[in-house]
Length: 383
Ligand code: OSB
Ligand code: MG
Image (cartoon, rainbow, N blue to C red; front, side, top):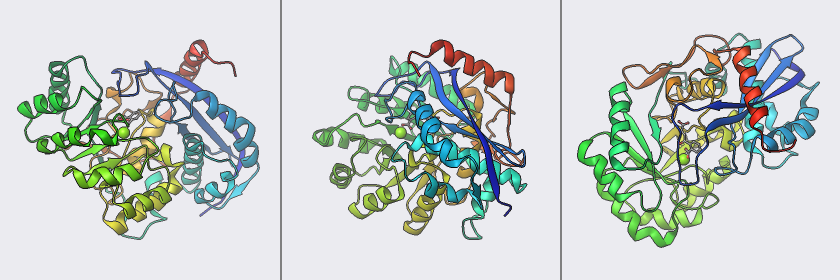
């Protein structure tokens, strides 16, 4: 591999309006907020990454403000001027800064892109070069769609009809107390066989175990993150009471968290979000653990722009990703996105990995500038 030397790192805080708002148990945002990280190497190669945070610290603790603070004051000064043999050297360089996983993931993703482009490889082939030989990209990622909390079951059914009609073969519904059993009942009455799952985003407690057991009769492929965002122990107490596999999202922030969850019997499926675990190097470690333990695995989303989406589609095309990922076509999120070409759903519920070098999509400078301008106008915080 040709090494890269980092010459400069530029940040682009963005706000991009959503086509369809995703209401979860912790809230909703009218815009996709995030920080786009642009790494330029001394060879003039430009790599793009996305620190996919949200406007409010509802899913995780980071925001556009904290991401810029940590990058500008700590991570960028550490990395500029450094020569890296490959992108897996990034975690050791950023370890002196604790936490801030979404931020680190955005930075690392830009370096992965720059390193792949320097070596004239697709990002996914670069990922696969760190895995055993049989783990080559399948060329497509199998995907589903995530649907927010709606005013009524009838409204939800209308959206599911539309998504199933578009070809999505797996539906995920956001739930919260009071929006769960009747919802699953209504959806199963019309869609008895569709691959269906529910995501609670930490809205329940162990006291709700009896209530959650009622979900077992709906043949769900999993229930995602029912309990606290920082919990593994109580999930290990809940899982034996349910037939439905528990999928962990928020709770698994590292490979070590995953090892603990497996050991305790707290997890049946993993939602792997590159943002949540601090980047693709940690993703590769987690991927290896899932393969070793035969733990079902899929790639989660943070409503990323085309920059984060392209990298996630690439990772999700690896053969150890065994269930549909939370990565939908561009038109489900943005019109237009800040990248071209858009991701379009194939009839078999897949997205195709771009064929170009690195992330394989082009950033459109005017659209990025417009999204940055929108953030500046909206920004309620002082930098
Ligand atoms: O819990 O998986 C989640 C989006 C923002 C924050 C948390 C979650 C989500 C999603 C979106 O479910 C999935 C997607 O990007 O399509
Ligand atoms: Mg989730």
